[in-house]
Image (cartoon, rainbow, N blue to C red; front, side, top):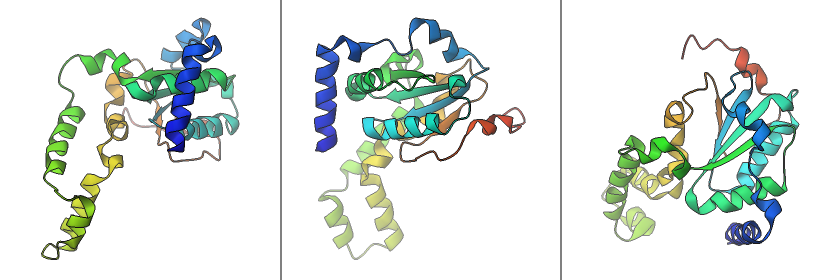
Length: 202
């Protein structure tokens, strides 16, 4: 409930405060979004505070923050609150980009495998009548079957934000290397040495 209230307050701020609607990044930093000399990180989240913790801890622990680009991907509902938060709480000198999934051309070009899989998953979930209590109460099924059904009901596993990492090459075709960060972490060290790892063309 508190996160929902924060989102509503930030959406209101986005509407009424020009400072909450800043272009992210600013026009002069837009070229950095596709510049492979920068360290590119992706955070996919529909949780403003979680994304903020990841991004802030990343920048604060980085030895070269002015060479860092953080691409924050969110959903349509959270886009304006996310935009407002990072406009009002900049992480300079790092470059921050906030985009919603519908801003990516690739997502609007037709069939997207992860979205198709999620539609099928929704159909499977609809078969679990009675919710989690009914699943657990069914003593005729094996524990691993019960666990699988409970997992299928979890919002975490049914959020497109959780599956977006699969499609990073399609979403960022001009970048040679980027690091995906889950939104439930706190960065405690400089992550830029990851760029020194030879991925053998992967």
